[in-house]
Image (cartoon, rainbow, N blue to C red; front, side):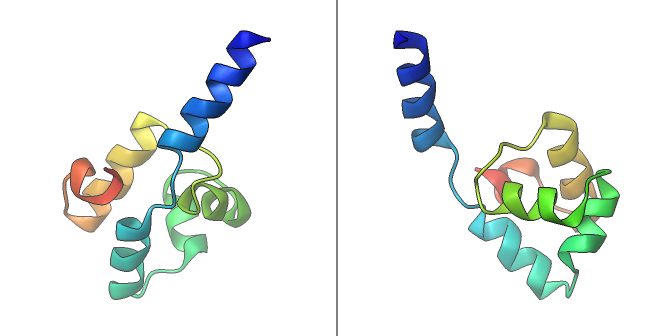
Length: 77
């Protein structure tokens, strides 16, 4: 029970919308479907991650950062 409460607090603290990622994606005129395809997700799954509902995996962040020619820290943190 205590673990679930702790997880919820951590989720609220760390899972935030990735506004920088979204801004860069729109600047490059890339669709959510395109970026989702890069990392092997469905469009809706990617959109949930971009909105901060679910976390990105390390490898997903690396793939996206490489495509955007940016550092992971610039896009995700």
